[in-house]
Length: 316
Image: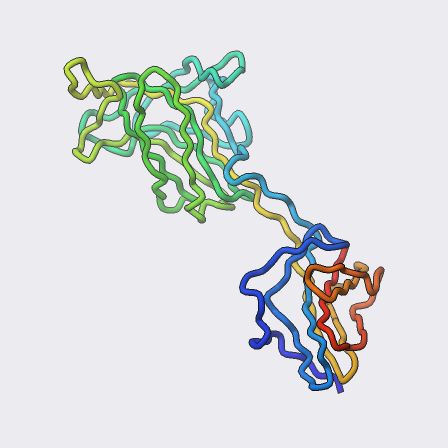
């Protein structure tokens, strides 16, 4: 009489983490953590089911692919120049279009220049620029921009981000150390998991006062005193929200196993229609051999033996 085996075995839970295994018939496969033992003194076969993935997509380096970018070469538009997204002014600043970074070879080459920042000692973290785009299908986000400041602009800026209109997430601060030159800045947003895959991601750059409650100008006056002025300017170019494409994998094949005194039977009742191939090996490192292919049925049986065997089922 066939006996249905328990779905998990605490005695043979060998793998602490899932492992990856390349094998015939698929681009990649995941080895689950579960051994299925045949609980009979007459059966010494140990069976490991490998639910094959029908497809995987190689990931780009985290946070390097442009989701949306603003080069501001069109002085009439705040829409993203690459991808889909919008920029907007924050905290009462006004904008004009100026010469852009030399890293942008386009002609014309523009950048957005901001002025009209808060008066000294007021409204910290309110004035600047906000950028929005969709992160659907993206993870491990990053934020990149080039900034150029006048000597009297706030040297300190802070970046925040939010997913789908949620709470503001602090991404960190940056201090501009030289005036009148473009500086490349990159913020890693990947520590904020809620941004990954969000329907809308907003990232904003704002001026920030020091711990003493004062804005500090980029270039001190000749006597060393603070030069900050609300008339100081920030200029931004090549602003981009970055990410890595979310992994796309098909769900694994749901499998079952039964056995009697001399036979082990694999079944995958949830997969109807596609043909399947069953592979067998005596070790995880292979070699893997096809024991049946082009199967339209939903089961495979074979006799048990004295050595461990490992099975995998793949679908096109």
